[in-house]
Length: 275
Image 1 (cartoon, rainbow, N blue to C red):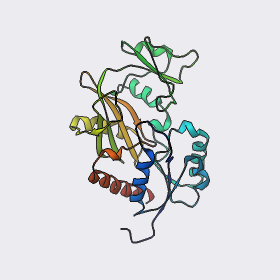
Image 2 (image 1 turned 90 degrees about the horizontal axis):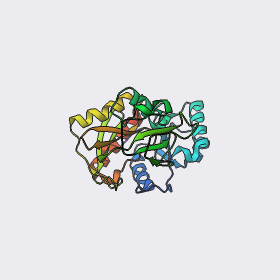
Image 3 (image 1 turned 90 degrees about the vertical axis):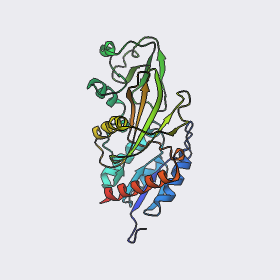
Image 4 (image 1 turned 30 degrees about the horizontal axis):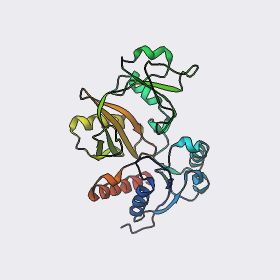
């Protein structure tokens, strides 16, 4: 237990967000109960964060739902945090989902192990042949606007704002969870049709090297990141998403000792961020 004054933390979450297959509220209630041992902590909705930020040492963005649902409020929060010099966890300069989906195009173009991705009609020929293709908005979330098409193509006049990928035949999806650059645990969905029915996954050295490569590519020294990947029919791991804004942690899918280790490491990371 800390002996001095506890740093104050504004914990941003939408406890009532109706996530499919996930219980945002339960996860944040449990995690904040543990963090209160070390921090003076208050919860708020993302729409209220900018107005309440003054007076807190740090703000933690957790299960606050897709930013698209509160874009103006999120922009106001970012602006206010910079104005006040408030430390934000995760810091606001992440290069993954925090900044949109452009990173998938950039990483694909640079030859990293990601699902091949383009955002311009002129580049459609770079995609591999596939029975179907995925078309989705670059600023989408939770599969909003996603559709499957037989031929790769972009909506008319929408170069640069939509993504096109081949629909991958994969064996399963797996997620790797990191605090700062330290691996914490991994979970996977053995049945591709039940992507939120997760069970613990024991990664090998190659799996961890794959996931850590994307965490190191990102620019965050502090914070929580989730590396989502799919295992192809040929056995290769390909990046699906690098979630560095408010990744759901699925802490209810790991045992008590892993949850406690996660809370201890997050506490240390927050204290380090605060100096």
